[in-house]
Length: 379
Ligand SMILES: Cc1ncc(COP(=O)(O)O)c(C=O)c1O
Image (cartoon, rainbow, N blue to C red; front, side):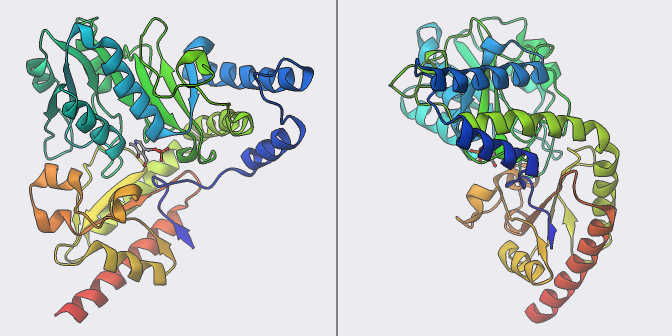
């Protein structure tokens, strides 16, 4: 099996699963309980919070646990907009965000917020000049993803952060779900106020995540309840998952240093290999994130090619995992190239530190065979 769908989800590290089992078995208490068993769980929770804060180079008091990227994005965006609407109702994002951001903006627009969607160029990047032009007196929030989940384009987060430092009334949210552990980003230097991270994209467990909320930033909670997580996120914490998340993040950030070179080499093998296959158009920009390569075979439906590759033991995806079942065209590829056929025939390859160069070569051969076979059938 050659697993190339790591942007959909990653395989948890064995150490991560061991931590989860140990904590679930031996420290099952509710961290809000006052007795000793609860206190033990609370201790584990605060140790994990501190470990994650150190890895992100932020304060423990700025780390809030969520159930993943979707919740983090909703909490950051709706929470920031609702808590600050007395200062203005204009909010900005890009046209290629993950559905958890897009749909949150859609809901806010139905509630009377004015939304600006920044376009991207053919490399899948927004322009800082466009953003500056879009800013208004009543702008309260800018939300821009770090690494695009479909094509891997990297947004100029540091430059955007620099610009927004001149507008302290505007909150800056970054969806860092595909960026963390793959492309460096300093939350502090970039002046980020809110940042979303998901556990299962970095070899942690599903149902875990972090929302970084800079100290002093006000957001409205989405859930009513016991006021856990500094009142921002009610609900008993998933202590075992959180301890496992701290471990996954530490290992992933370490692997990012150890295997950065290998990941780039694998990408190069894919990039050049794909360009040599007749009928294939590479959609990802040359300077995209090291773990995502997206391509189209216009005229061939993504799903058909995906299943053909599966018969060869190669696992890829079409658009983002959550959109792929809807069988819609890739929004990002459509925004970049304005070509429906190209957007309807996308395949995303997403790698992790555990893939090998040899696997990339085998996958390229399999893609070449699959495309040739399907094109023959179609003719
Ligand atoms: C960029 C991006 N943001 C948010 C999410 C949602 O994360 P989760 O699956 O943890 O809800 C994803 C998942 O694919 C993603 O790629």
